[in-house]
Length: 182
Picture 1 (cartoon, rainbow, N blue to C red):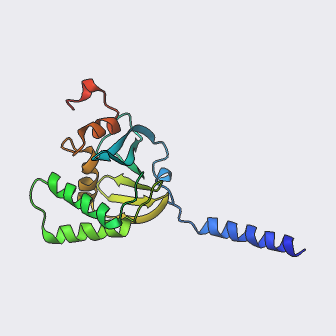
Picture 2 (cartoon, one colour):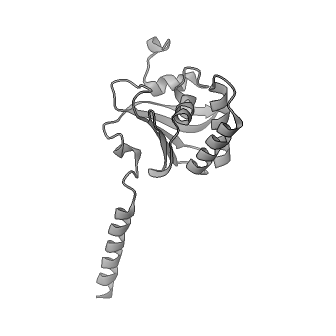
Picture 3 (tube, helix red, strand yellow):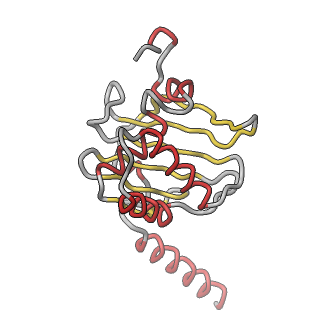
């Protein structure tokens, strides 16, 4: 009898836990018709750091439509490393120097969104045009950033034609060699 009571308690706890999860626990619920546009590996000095995957709903990727970018990590990296590398790239791609207040606000947003990663972990970003973005760690919503300029600058790290790894950009967009002038 005690084991049946314990099993019922565990079952009830599991149901209550599932009900307590936020409705937007995974970006796929917000982009339900998404399909993968492309994927690729990012390596730094021969070390494979992560696999990137771009998801969108339209016939072609577009800054005016929501999309998701998943990064599946192959190495351990600290939150501070992720934030600093992102800020460096956002500043490199900016048309002009960014004000210190913007840099501080954006760094803080990423510190709240990111975690120390280890192999197998996944950080996903959902781009919401004109609104901002959401960040998910292993499928759980961690941070929503209501700043369209931040969202555009962040995702430009991978999707801007001046991205540090233009071949990864091409693979993410699903472009062939004939399309590389895009």
